[in-house]
Image 1: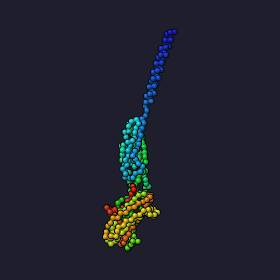
Image 2: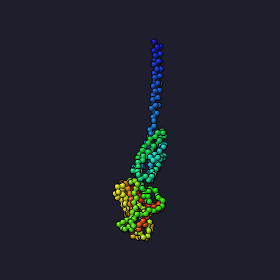
Image 3: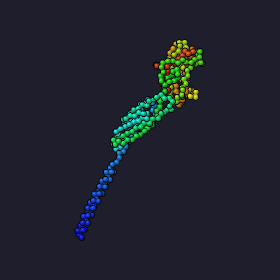
Image 4: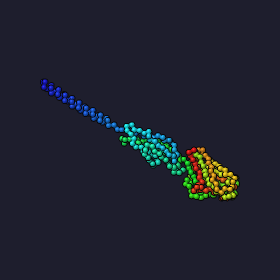
Length: 279
């Protein structure tokens, strides 16, 4: 009986050892699985960015406030939304204006920043910005208004046989398609040529919207001196609110012999009208 009891005690002892070993082994497996935790992705942050820019501005973008909680960021990739990309913590970009006047502004671009950390995890943030034209430049030539500087030439101003102060000579430029203008200032530079005996004492510019209403005008007095044959006239004004430009009329007051006054265009003598939207 004592022998059987002894064997039973030994059996229980070894059974407890085996059970304890299995339990420890299971606990070890649980700890290993629990320690295999996937890393946290980095956090991208775009700082030093505004919502509104003008074409031609140098836009500085900064990602230095981005961070990674369990490591470090190893890559910064920028996408400017215009087909171009760049890499780096800080970058600069310029959006180019293509002289497209039949587009309604502002244009919306989406800037994205993608950051990658040392665990090869990536995260992306986006931000929209508005782009406005800084200016429109129209050159005058015999075919009307153009965005490209024409070759050298001149256009005769239409005048009566002998115009007086109440019968100005004029030239009208009608746009093929109305151009949307935001609030802006404008400046016209006109290179004039006349014969010795004609007299021009005042030049006026009138801007009309697509309905024919006056949206802005300006005037420059040239004096009563008739001795000049070539002269540069500069006139400026303001478009007070958003309008669609339909036509421009330039008026010349004085005593003008028929077809003896011309506007020069092309090369250095490129008569132009500039609309500046930054002011």
